[in-house]
Amino acid sequence: MIIRENGENIMRKKKKRNDLMEISSAVNDLLTEVVADRRALHQIPELGLQEKETSAYIKKRLADFGVTEVYDLLDTAVVAVYRGEKEGKTLAFRTDIDALPVMEETGVEFASKHPGKMHACGHDGHMATMLGFAQYLSLHPEEIIGTIVLLFQPAEEGPGGAQLLIDDGFLTKFQIDQIIGLHVFPEFDEGIIACKSHAMMARNGEIYLTVKGISSHGAQPQQGADAILAASAIIQGLHAIVSRNISPMESAVLTFGKITGGEAMNIIPGMVKIEGTMRAFSDDVYDTMTERVQCVATEIAKGYGCECVVEFNHMYRVVDNDPSMVDALKKIAKTSYVQTPPYMLAEDFSMYQKEIPGLFFFVGIRNESKGYVAPLHSGKMNFDETYLLGGIECYRQLIAELNKGESV
Image (cartoon, rainbow, N blue to C red; front, side, top):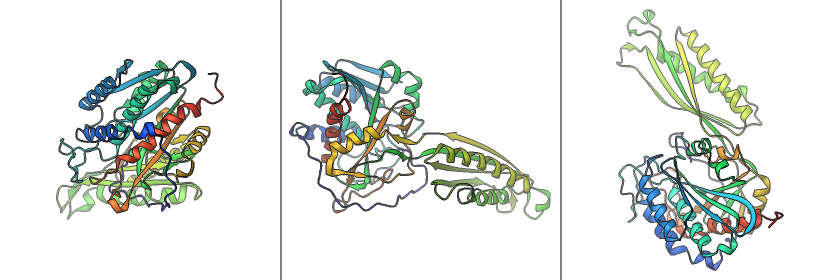
């Protein structure tokens, strides 16, 4: 899950704990192995497109379950396919497998063995959930309707493994009808299943500004064009975009978290670089922000005798949940279900949803009494694996629920 703002701290939505989801005995029986898988994977975090050890572990576990139809994609992606005797949809279930460049601070005995890398966004839990689901399908093939495709996807944190797989033909090769994914989330109490129809997470992009001036001695500013002064004015001007160019009925974020420039205190610098992020729940709003950033930055720079080069890295799209799939999840989760507010976080699962209907939901892992309160991307992020079973239970029941009304 992409979080680009430095030190982002999402305002927590206080939710009273609902009745916990009822977990079937067959899913409860998986807990020991789910815990073991999560803790083993937690120790071997790898960055995007470098997940060799992780992929090898996943393939070994699939072999342990007797899965025979397994494919390698993009070097580190793994796909497992289950084909049922009953006709039905082809449902894909996706987990991310990459880690973050974060130093672990949990102090747990199963901490990362790769210094400076950590599963600080819960992808170890997502993989353990998927492996538990794989084991369940192997033990209960009678529950398989149509074709079930399990996708272990690299590089969610960047550069965006979902789009790489789409470009590689994943959706067409396996003829995927619908796709499902989840994310552990410390904003909701343990056992909560949270989701909403349509926009749940934001579209995001990165902004890179290079302000080019003319260097001169600080005692002779008239001989130069001050890139620092121009950069300061540009940042102030850009922050008016959300308040003055976006409807107050819409939501948008524009944040600049990095600025570099200058060589000495008495030299007017000839170049300053600014980096930031922008996010919105609407493509129209996002496009307006893009146009205004380009215009405002370049025109303000001219007023200071400088030039501003504007570059964008348009990343992920809006996580846009299919309402009928959300209804199916509500029916399964019952009283453990809550409607989440939308979050300005971004997730490359959204790239699949551009192509086919998809469902993405949160699994609550927050427990203040146990200290499970650290936000995603924190070196202290941790959780109780027991609550991963809720994800497996949702997955197994979604097979039947999403195939209702189909010819089986």
